[in-house]
Image: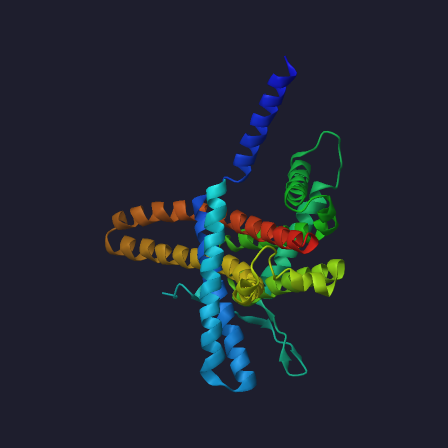
Length: 87
Length: 246
């Protein structure tokens, strides 16, 4: 067997193994994305409420960090969907 | 009939009080104790008689070991083997806890958010300390400012990165807790269908929900494995982030 052929076969084995490793089930992916989205929003609102309590400026920080949390949630959703396309 | 949520009730077995803090031994603690005993027995019986040609229990222990070590090698690399014992313990603790929760009359401690959150929060603290210890505070702060981004965008991106970093323990704990809690509630609801429909229609009505219940029990066991795996692999990824800050 020539060296070229062997290299080709090795490359193919590598790509197949890589695709197998990243072949996640749809269920776990769905859970991951949905919980990431919710967790970011919860974290944002907790930080906002904490800062409001500290500075006693009731709704201001809560609203700012709620919006930031929502942006973060959708940003992480965007990132995981982008990774999905690259597979 | 008991409500589907009655199975998650915490009952005190031995009441203990430490300077006003309630540290009673509850059914949750009992379930955790059983988990630790089960893991110890599993590992002890597996490696009691070490042979070159392994027995069944030895094969099981060895394949678990191989599984975790290959998970660490794939996700962290060679430097990650330092954290092997931690991830191995974490994986087995959650896996056996989930599986023991599937037994009738037992208690699933992974279905309580406070338990999963405290595990996830200590992982989060540990990962943060590892990152600061290995790279220094300055490099750790730079982790939140991705390189190659125009400066005006950083005003928006840095808070986003910080919030997504802080949301890690919440997403890690909620994932495990929500899966276990939802699964066990669903099992109980379908189980009450079997009883009520069967009692009202001379058993015939109960057959279909019973078949469904059996299928769901299988699914629940798969989820028990899957969630322990996901918890361990996410811990690996977080440690990887801490070791190779980029």
